[in-house]
Length: 349
Image 1: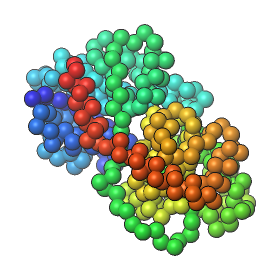
Image 2: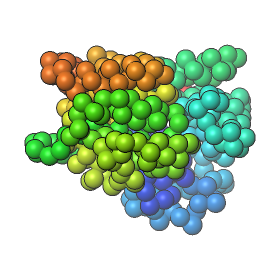
Image 3: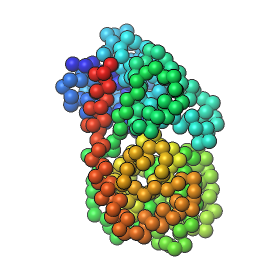
Image 4: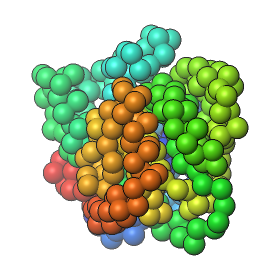
C-alpha cells in the first residue's frame, strides 16, 4: 500500500477554490482505493483552521508541515505554494502560468511571490516530478523552463458531474451565461463589447456574468456596462452558491467563455453536462478540452466574438451539433480518471 500525504492547506477554509475542489475530489477517489493510504498535511500557519479541512474531508488523518513523524511514500503539493522538505518523494501540481503573461496580470501580483515561488519550486532539485492539467500546460512549462530536469505528467481535471441535476428548461427569459471572475485574462470586457454589438437585434436576450467582481481590471467591466445604453441586458451575479450556479447552467441558452488564457477550463465541462452549446477561444487549453464540442473564436477580435455569439444564438443545427459532440467529449473526463492517472505518477516515482 502506498502512503500518500496530500497538502490540504488550500482547503482550510469554509469555501473551496478551484484548487480546493481539485484536492477534495482527488481525495474522495483515493479514499475508495485499497492500494492508497491517504493522509493529509497542513501548514502550521493554517493549523488552527483544520476544522474546515475536517468538514470537507472527514476521516482523513492530518499532519502538520513540517513534521518529524514518519515520512510518507509520496508527498503531493496541489499548487506551487508548499514548504515540505521531508524525505518522501515529492510531487507538485502546476495549474497555470498566468503570472508569466505580464499583459494579463496585475503588476502588483507580478511583483509578489507567486511567479517567484513557481520558479523556486520547479527549479528545486528536492522536488521529484511535476503534474499539470493539460498538454497545453505541459508545453508551457517546457517553454518557460527549457532546462527542467524533472518529468512532467498530465492528469486532466473533471467537473463534479455527480452533483449536477439536469432539469427541463423553463420558458424564462433567454440568456447567455459566462462563469468566472471579472478578470482581465477572462476577457470579460471583450465579451461585453461583443454582446453590446448584437444586443439591438435581441432585446429580450440577457448576458449573465456569474463570478467574483474582484478580478484584475474588474472596474473596467463594471464601468463599461454602467455606461452602456443596453445596461439592462447585462446581469451580474456575484459569488453564487453551487445550487445557484447549477440553476444558471440549467436554464441558459448558451455558454460563452472567450478567455485569453486557461490552463484547463472546468466551466466548459460543466456547460457540456447541461447540454449547452459552447462558444470559447481558439487558444491555450480550450480547444484541447472541448475538441469538437464548441464553436471557437479569436478572443482578441471583438467582431469575431460578436459573430460567434450571433451564430450560437441563431443557428439551431449548429447548436444541436455542438451539444452532440460535447456529450461524446465529456466521456473522456472524470475525477476517477484523474485519480488513476495521478496514482500512476506516484507509482512511477
